[in-house]
Length: 590
Image (cartoon, rainbow, N blue to C red; front, side, top):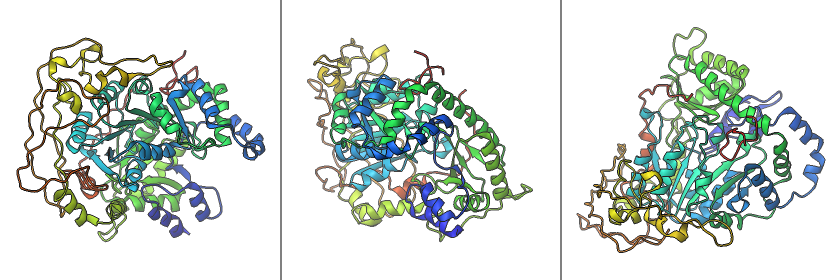
């Protein structure tokens, strides 16, 4: 029976098996204590569950209202304009439509992260440029380096998860807004805030209000995770009316079920309980991190999500720990070996009440150290195991990229790929590259952003691109005064150290100086780049990089996985509700 249960994990690609599948294979008795699925354990309240149970017959018998009706109620609750919101049958439905409608050729994403952001675009033949988060820096995302990475590869869509899944890394609002403005010439910037309501490092961390004013930004929000209702598939996105309307027009009229409708219409009466549940999760997160940090050799990384990312002690193998915790202690944990950019040295553990955490810590003590804590009781798996190091995800990536495998990828990426585009100079005082459109404009012609910070991008200077509102009345960007700035010098791009693979190293290409332009480029239109001279007589291919092929000088999935070392990172850096929480997920009154 145990073999049947643990075998489910080996066939789930980048995700975990469902609780229903585990229950079917697990035999009689109660299900395991769930430290795997990131769900709010304190909401809905028992009274809300009783109400849903009493209305179960009507809920499952009759059609729900249209998605527009349910969306309007949610927007009334969150004080958001309905024309800027699209609700989906779970955030993954919205990710799917974002990919189909708005991702033309390539997408950049830091890894490790939520698997649908890597798998979905690869399934539709897009190029995925993966930016590796380094274990040595605690998996923190450096936005300036990420921006340089995007410029070097010519990526057209950028994604940021805040907090990131599985490590819980958090970025402050001002930094994300600065990044959005620096990337204003991209086709799309997506900020995935699925876990942001659990954060407490900042009073108003969400960028939903800023997204509605920008022509190429979408903010993705989850409801199932925050409300503890993964089985009710509902989430929403926020964007300017044109972007939100484009996604909304593709969704079925009844894409939201009756359970989702019932919960949304219940929420206005339970805002206080919801705010209290978030506060309790935040308190539990600190307590759980403290208890786990007491285990010898276990590293706990700072998190602003409702989960903790931990590295197991040397000698412990994640798949063995996971299987033994499930079969011997009836505790389900998330081993992260099948996440690109991670390995089986890592677990993601969901924040749960203290009584459950004590059971988790006790089980880990017995599995990792025995009863005496004298040494790790779990041995490393042999090199012949294809799953324990997470290579299942790598094999899937390579086998599904045009069917050409690693040799074909190397040949296409180095022999026939187009040279990488020139890197935009960095914005003064920030280290953040300017948009390609803005970098070609003389510095004296670039108006400064609000507060005299990063210059507003050229794409944002055209007033009509920033229009949002009703009756044709718009808000216009780029009319905030001018500021003289010296022309910055292009910076060299820090590249992760690649692991030995069969593909040749990319050749360096001298970059020409930015050329002045007579006028700003139109918004979101392809910007003409000066031709890049090639040092070798290799003919450059025309058109976009072939789907599924790493950009010239980019990383394969195997290289991304190989960049994470085993140097320890300190488990420090932890940041220190009366009305219904606002759209930013916090409990401020008013």
